Image 1 (cartoon, rainbow, N blue to C red):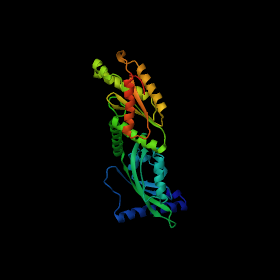
Image 2: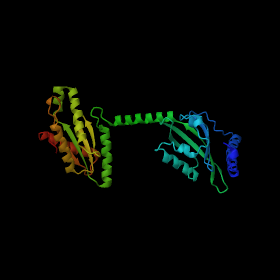
Image 3: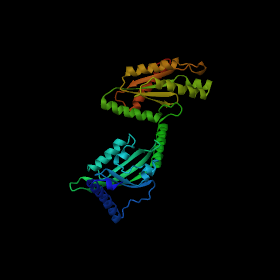
Image 4: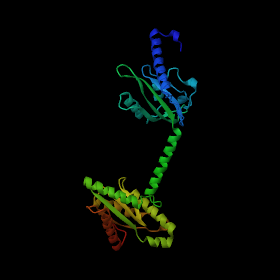
Length: 324
């Protein structure tokens, strides 16, 4: 910087800026708080002079983003980093800084992604606080420290992904890919509570593959598994997103129909029955299902299931391949 070409006012401003920075550094030295942490990912400390919008920082904060020191502007502003924030992290990070500047939080603290020179993103953990105020209590100077937490965040994201997969696996029947018995009961319990609260209708249906034992005995269990998976697929393709289908056990399936009266649940169940009857299974095997439908009328979950199962039994007794 050529100080000879600057005006008196500009030079005074520069001196005041350096005095604020030096004051901060001296205070840290006296307090033995240099922020020289040995923690993994430490990129050093930073200082933001609000008056001149000048950020002084350890070059590591920028060089780890793929930039050379020669590419760092002589005068780095707060916007130099803000402009590189991931768009999803921008509002949260700005809100964190705003809350601290306006006294709503004791410190500024944020985790955000910042774009590298190559266009990908690194995760940073940033923390700082106001250290100097003017006579009117207006913030003049902030000091903080920043860490590269990319490896930690990537590990965390991968762990969360695996946890989601495990949760899904624990709620899903491995063969049919529908919800398992436990998930069905939990959803039914929740749906009953909601129906009681809203006074909306709730219905359930239980389907059973007709003469499934004959299929296993004549075609083998591999073919039987194929039939179970295909029936599950047909059931799922005929229900709404808010409905929940699952394998109740063996060759039995259940569907919970929230906000659905008996006639509508029966109509959907009849469509499912017809779709299964009309599907051409391998080796031209004919598959049909029987079903029992029941609307919730204040029963306990197990009582509701039993009543739907009673209707299923009637459908079987009356000749199968029908919905009652």
